[in-house]
Image (tube, rainbow, N blue to C red; front, side, top):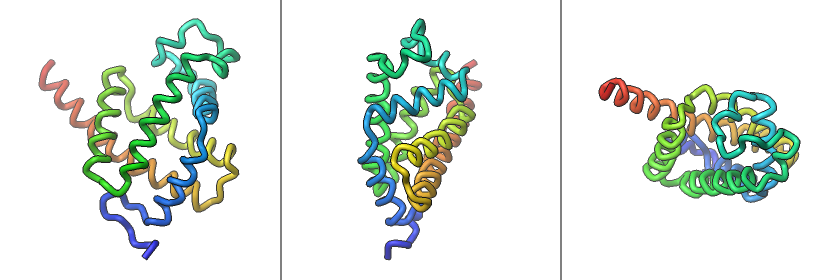
Length: 162
């Protein structure tokens, strides 16, 4: 029963449970650490965060602005995880996040780079097992597929209105 694949997400119940349990352990400081790693690994992404202008890399960990963004991020990811069993709602939530990022010219590449970094962070801060890490990879692959399709739609709409 636990290994039956949900046709909407491509995830099994065991994978969903692993991701939910793992996410429940993630604190705001872990998310701050994720963004610090993101900016260090992919420095170009820092330009997307205008509110962080003037804050040096070392000061980011204690920045209330990055902490606020991390809390916002945490709420967004929580909404995804809370709706893994409601594919229609999940897709709409992912599309809304995609639109928000698309307006800032954040494209698929940025998500493709960030998702493995996030999975690595989960492994580092939780010492998560291989099953949980693979469940995260599969979950994020599902999210990325929705993002990719929606970006194509948004780009087509943009071309149509140019």
